[in-house]
Each structure stands twice: as structure tokens, then as C-alpha cells.
Length: 81
Image (cartoon, rainbow, N blue to C red; front, side, top):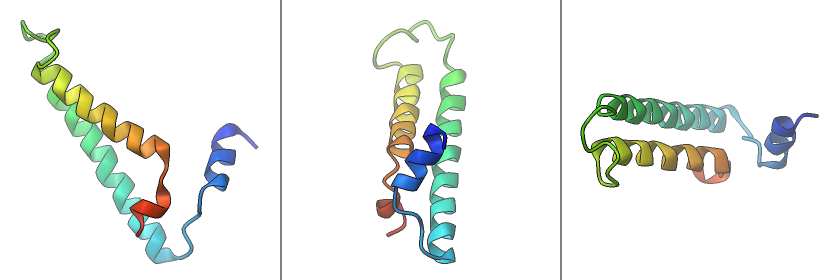
């Protein structure tokens, strides 16, 4: 069993099709959100202040990073409740 499979099996698996559908919708929303934030950041990567901590680029990348961390933490039971 690879590391990803072991991590998935250690989490609470969705019990029925409604939970699977809810999980699928949640992950779809999160991935679309991450993609949107990265696209928004990309349009500002060449801004003169892109290195500034409060720049649009860094703000959007920060939001995408937070969303990705939430997905990777894998709190499935919270997402489907």
C-alpha cells in the first residue's frame, strides 16, 4: 500500500452515495477555488510591487495555499457533515 492509499484508508471513508456526492462537490469547489486564486495571482506576477507582502500576487497565492492546506489535511468528516 502506497503512502496515499494508507492515508486515505486511515480517514473516515464516506458511508453512502450522498456523502460521496457531498465530498466530490466540496473538493470540486476547493480545486476550482485554488485554480481561480492562482489565475488571479498570475495576472499580477509582473506588477512592480509583486514582492511586497500585501501585493495582489502574494494575497492570492496566500489564499490558494490556505485552501490547499485545508484539502491536504483531509478532515473529510467535517466536509460531509
